[in-house]
Amino acid sequence: MREVNTQLIKETVEELLIRANYELPECVRTSIENAREKEQNELAKSVLGKLSENLKAAKNLNVPICQDTGMAVVFIEIGQDVHLSGEPLEDAVNGGVANAYINGYLRKSVVSDPLFDRINTDDNTPAILYTEITKGDKVKISVSPKGFGSENMSAVKMFTPSATKEDIEDFVVDTVRKAGGNPCPPVIVGVGIGGDFEYCAYLAKKALLRDIDVRNANKNYAEMEKELLSRINMLDIGPQGFGGNTTALGVNIEYFPTHIAGLPLAVNMSCHVTRHLSKEI
Image (cartoon, rainbow, N blue to C red; front, side, top):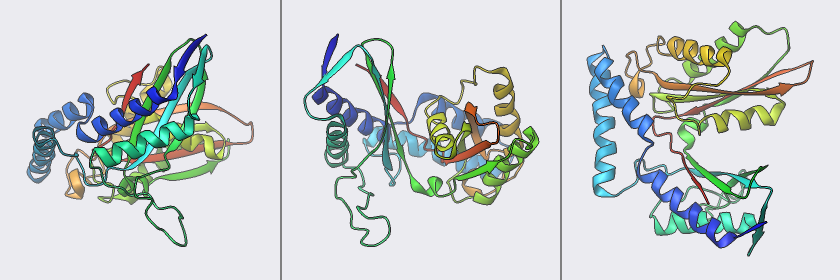
């Protein structure tokens, strides 16, 4: 049995959230640059160039990539041979979030009551926290600061088993089409298939943690990811909604068994600033 003090988890959450907000994953940066080289629309090519310049400027000036530094989504995989000591896990995570958004000079965007008072919590807490018990004696922490320009464009639909692969693809593509330029394209699309009402949404969010150059291990879903990306890029929405053949940089699908009477589907939209970072302790 290995003991891990949650103070280390707090410090790791702080570190990851600051780093994630200041620098995009390499796969996303490279994808934007590659898209610029291939883009046929001159305006879209110029926009993609500006996006690349923004990423470089953020790194050189040591400032956040985007003014919307997101709501903190934290995934923690805890090995079953780990004993956590110190303050409660949720308190440690929220402490790390607060420290990150205060010490990292990140915009604080969380309000305490979603409907009535909507008063800012002033430290971007609480985080959205997902935990999973896994094998071993390690703790893996993944963070995904999620902006709401794209989050607001997401959708869930409870299909019946009579739905076809084409029905599923049509819904994903139509969700992107309806979003238009609102989610700051080129987008990255997380798709969750299966589970139940809330679990398919979790899958769609988790799909955004996967690098966009890594396909699903299941060949059927891997092929579906490629097909969806191709169809989405034919919508002519383009970078920032100005047209072109780069509406999306990637489509990631995660799936899970479901009930014989259902076929849940969730589409989690993410902008070109799809931030995620992981660390194992």
